[in-house]
Image 1 (cartoon, helix red, strand yellow):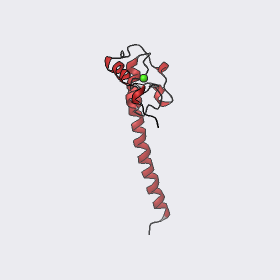
Image 2 (tube, helix red, strand yellow):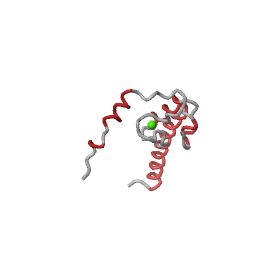
Image 3 (cartoon, rainbow, N blue to C red):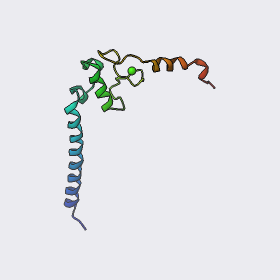
Image 4 (cartoon, rainbow, N blue to C red):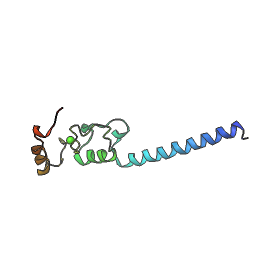
Length: 103
Ligand SMILES: [Ca+2]
């Protein structure tokens, strides 16, 4: 039967490994992304749209709420944001009130 001290040591070392891998994951993010990802990013934190897109792609859950209208394009008001294409305008055209069924 193992001594409690051994169990504690094993537990601590496995926790350390977990913490270390999490830290490496985070520092990998930090290398390439703006500093605001460590706290909270707003569209105002980015100097251009590419930067916003990079953060948006890195966090698919959109934890910073960069894409408020949910069309998959973050921070449309930033410089060099993509123009709304033909596809998005035709999509909104097809969304007629008749297609929404209510009980
Ligand atoms: Ca959007």
